[in-house]
Every structure is written in C-alpha cells, then in structure tokens.
Length: 96
Image 1 (cartoon, rainbow, N blue to C red):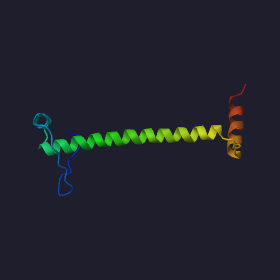
Image 2 (image 1 turned 180 degrees about the horizontal axis):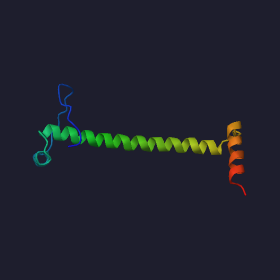
Image 3 (image 1 turned 90 degrees about the vertical axis):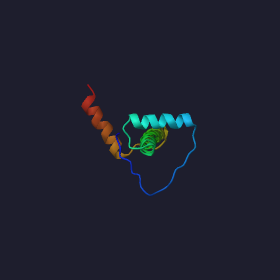
Image 4 (image 1 turned 90 degrees about the horizontal axis):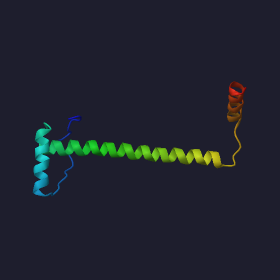
C-alpha cells in the first residue's frame, strides 16, 4: 500500500455490484494486505483518481502552452526590445 486511508466520519459512497466482482475485490484486498475491503477500494480509487487528474492537467497545460506558442509566432505583433537584444546576442555568439 502506498497511501494511507483517511477513513473516518465524512461523506458516504455506496454502490451495488455483482457478487463475483465483490468477491474479487475482497480477495484482492486480502492478498494486498489491506485492513478491509473499504480501505482497498478507497485507496485504489484515490490512487487512480490522482493519476487521472495529473495526466489530464498535464495535457491541458501542454495544450495551453501550444496555443500560447503558436499565437506568439503567428501574430503580427513586432518583437519587443528584449527579444531584439536576445536575437542580436545569439547572432554574435553563434555566427561565424
């Protein structure tokens, strides 16, 4: 187990599932060393939720970065003084 369950008084989550699925979950919880089926379900779902949120946030950040980049290179806005100075510095350092 990589995370600790924060199980106490709080919101409830109830679900119905086929008996075979519950038996599988109980077996996995026992084999995984979890204290209870509830701990297993909460910890497993929490880990997956964190993974999904991180992945989607990364994708959104990447899409936003692409939009900012392509807007910058396709716009008609002239370069500012810092960009002009950086370009001159680059040419001086790397031109033959």
